Length: 212
Image (cartoon, rainbow, N blue to C red; front, top):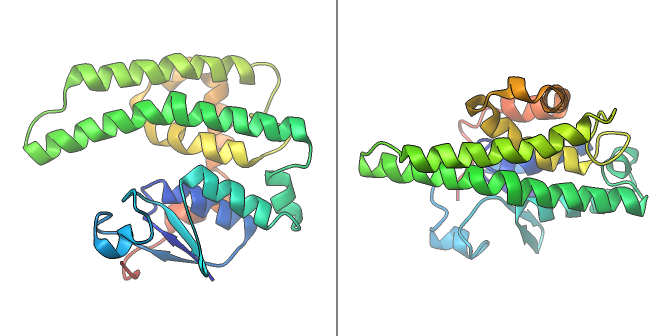
């Protein structure tokens, strides 16, 4: 059975979403300390998630998702997540890269500032947080324009891997933004997060799970 390391409030949720979409059984292990030697032996970067399938170990959430979709490409649902059409696959890569560099980067910067301030007993730097939110809002304008061309999904005619990869960070930061300015993004995000697979991830009871 596959093992995914990380909790549902981390990037591990992005991979769990794909696993739930595919219907692939998996075991979840929490990582209380990503710098602990036992975990660093799996992931020298000391970050979550990590996926282990027997002796095969893979890190970085979007790489894990691409592998999962390719690994289970014989299933109809997996094929829909990663279509054979090379142009659609290119769009999946394009918008996944956009989500990581233009949305997730700024979100991560904000989270690190909040974490730093919390650990130091300080108030987060409002300038840093404000700039991160402004940067995300600016790049969401691009997605809004893209979806305003009669598209329900980002990369293809149906729900694909990129909708998962992009929706994850946007769903995390949306509560801090004025999403009324992005009606098409909001509608798309609603379609993504209403999917039963995502709902199952968010509903997971993580109490009592194994840890490393």
